[in-house]
Every structure is written in structure tokens, then in C-alpha cells.
Amino acid sequence: MKRIVVKIGSNALTRPDGRLDVTRMSALVDQIAWLRQHDCEVILVSSGAVACGRRELKTVNHELDSVEQRQLYSAMGQAKLIGLYYDLFREYHIHVGQVLTMKENFQPGEQYRNQQACMRVMLENGVLPIVNENDTVSVTELMFTDNDELSGLIAQMMQADTLILLSNIDGIYTGNPADPQSQLIKEVLPGTDLSEYIQTEKSSAGRGGMQSKYATASKIQQAGIRVIIANGKRENVLVDLMEHSETTPHTEFKICN
Image (cartoon, rainbow, N blue to C red; front, side, top):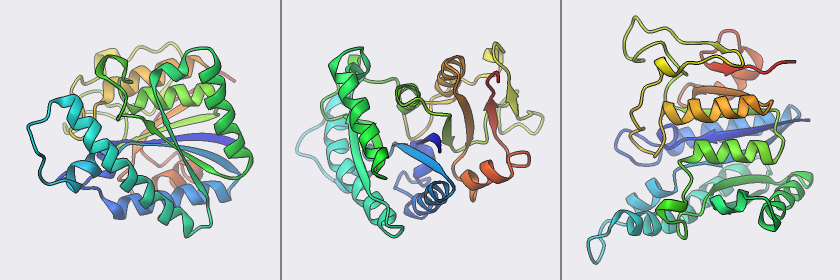
């Protein structure tokens, strides 16, 4: 079986008003279920907890700083997010398990081995791991850069064949994606430097951006894992990447055979 890590970013899971797009989330669950039916083991790294919590709680007792906000909203939102995934995957009789992790868990040692063993036994028993950062206890200096970085670490830890980073754009362009003159870069060979094309703006809903995706993709490509950057809002994107990759817009970081 092929092992695929799918990272769904906040921009792929939220509507323009910042609320969770449950219809899009359901469509992505349908596609992940399809992957599993076609001999793929899937590990899901999902953003969206903070967005869920922010919309769940309308008022707070005092003005919160950025760390307090993240702790409060993620604590509430993670419960809602995993509950939604549980209900959606249950329609396919797929069991899910929640993995909340921190950056220190990826240092060599017992914590690393324990996390790896936990996810391995989940996969062996047909359970779909749903991974996110434990924002309730992570503080700023110990946080992952974003879930792009986290998904790359998970892909390496679990020796995945492919890492798919889903956002709200089709991949890396030669300029601003909104500029009609910009061209989508479809393939990136090992050692290729695309830094001149990378936009430095952060995403509107999450902590990442294309700079983060490029950094993660380059690093994971060097580790021998194929990386795909694609648009999670595009209909049937995961299925099309598997069945019609030549006509599905995306950027692929290829590996040497």
C-alpha cells in the first residue's frame, strides 16, 4: 500500500468569512475515503481548530493576548473539528484517532518513538490518524512554524511515499497567482531553486503561506518523499491527482528513481 500524508490548510477549510466550510470538509473526506479504497494508507494533518473555536465563542471575559487566544480557541475548536471528522468518516465505516503533538515530540528519543509507534499501530488496524499541533500547551517559541512543517515531519517519521499540501491555490507560480501572465510551475526537480518565485505573504486564515510550503517541500523532497502542492478547494482534487495528474493543476516536487 502507498502511504500518503494529506495536509489540509486553514484556507482550504474555511469560507471567506472565516467560518468552517463543512461542505468542503465533507468533500475532502469523501476523497480520502476513495484513496483508502484504492490501496492508500492515509495520515491526515488538519488545520482548522482555531477557526472552529473562534466562531464558536462569541464573547470572552477579558481581552486576550495572542497566546491566550490560540489556547482558548484551539481547545474549543479541536473538539468540534474532530467531532465533525468522526461523523463524516463514520459514513464510510472508517475509524479515526486524534494525534495532538508538539515540536519537542520530534526530537530523537522516547517521545519520538512513542508517537511513531502509536501512529503505526493505528495504521495497522485501519484507523485513520488525524494530526494537529497541541496548541493548548504549545507556547510561541516552541510552536511549529505551521502545519506545513508538521506534515513534513510526520511524512518523514512515518516514511510516507507522498506528501500532499492542500491550500487555496494550485501550486507555485512564476509570479502573483492573480496575474494572468504568471505560469504554474508543474514540476520541480531535486536541487532546483525557486526562491525568486516565492511570495512571502502569510495565508489569510492560517500561519503558513507559499514560502512555508516551498521550504517544507524542498526539505522533504531531499528526504526522498514526493511532495505535491495543490488546491484543496478544487473539486475532486485528490482523486484527480491520482487518476488524471497530467491535467490537474498542481506543483510536484519529484524525487530521483
